[in-house]
Length: 329
Image (tube, one colour):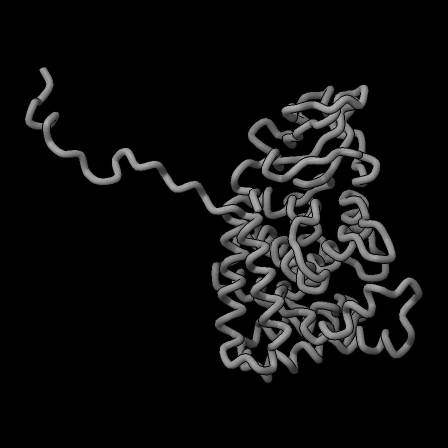
């Protein structure tokens, strides 16, 4: 028999209250982008820059921790609004956080290298839109500006009160290479730190997979291959393995054609069965699939045949359709 005293007792507040849905990863990243743009544009007049940048970095880290697949997909589906110069820093920071977590970096170290990613190009900010709109090679004067920007960024950060040596080091060294072929000073290993190498590779990767005014984005499998096989600026092998494991040839957000002929978007990295999850939006005959059909590349008939550009895929969808509320604007 039920305990009538217990049955009649008032229920504790909130027992039947609906749980709050998790925050939107896309909304957090766009909010971070807007805050960062305002901060960087006015950096010389900021009196609390270090605290502000770290706060934005915490939000980017939180977004990645909520759902790293959605955070990565935002990069490939061009969902982070704003100017390329600032958006690129947010996207680079996302990749930095994903890889830093895979390397079991401490929260303090992850926060520092994320903050460095957000501020690595502040010395170039006033030039970036001009360079973006060019359809000819950069002049020698413009190349000199590019090669000076790590030092100019460091000067601006120090002026704004940034005193973290590791943060400053990452920004200064993020275009240096192990064998001394980088810039601004041609520093070589072991002076090029592991965190600077992580920032460098994330920066170069995101630059390739982003569309520019003068070229289409490079498909993610080709972008990764370009970096790993680069003979001019060889990549640290251990770091290259991390990128291959965490991003792979077909990261979330990559548009793909399957062996079955279906076309869709990669929605999740490897799961328990060892395959990627793909949401298919066109059948082998090219007809639209609504709702999207989930496939796993662990199924031999659903392996990925190739990555596709947006034009070649010819599919239109919102991130919310694929990932739900965590990918809403």
